[in-house]
Image (cartoon, rainbow, N blue to C red; front, side, top):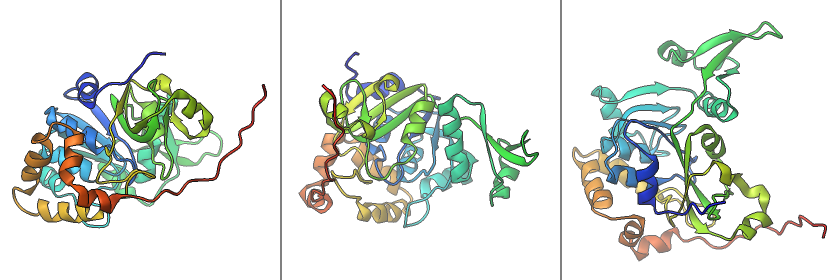
Length: 302
């Protein structure tokens, strides 16, 4: 199997194009901020941004003018407040939105991953979403006669996943909080994986149950340490909570988001420069102590 290792700049240039539907996966953990910044840096336009919980990564991409539409469930600055750039774009008519419940959004990527046209759900406590989103439909169960809610499959053009480690073929391992990374990857036409470490295939094979994304669906593997900041990567660095608070304060100012983008995205060549600019005080604050799991004996027959 071929080596898929490339730079983030090359991966975005090759697989993310104007007008694409892009799914940046990860739930509070392993959010691919470095890839979002590179998309901004390459000035992609008219993207459809899909994500179960569009937090700061999509607020920044919307502020940069990358998006024409947002497909999402809950959106906000977790634990802090609203997404000011997203709200302003919606209220001004610059950003189209398609909103779902969490379960409905995950059902969409699950259907896409399974090659199904839709998935049924039991009616939820969100009837208002169905009134404003025509993608909600209904079907009668052929077994019980019960009326079920349905949502269509979501098949993005590209999924972007951050993870702890992968080999150069793209076998990708994740541990800690698991989001919808696997479903989004299997649902998408192309998959870009950014990782903290590139490891030999022998390391991946030694603990196969951690392999959430197999090589055969991965197009690009990028060695990009600290790519999830200000979110976190279990075992590598902590969540930068002060950053989330500061983003709320900054974006409350009329030109705050643009000043941030000029200094921290357009003004820097890559994620390494970004991490160095954060400085040793932030590095020390986000450092984590080792906490290893117990070994697992898989056994083998020679």
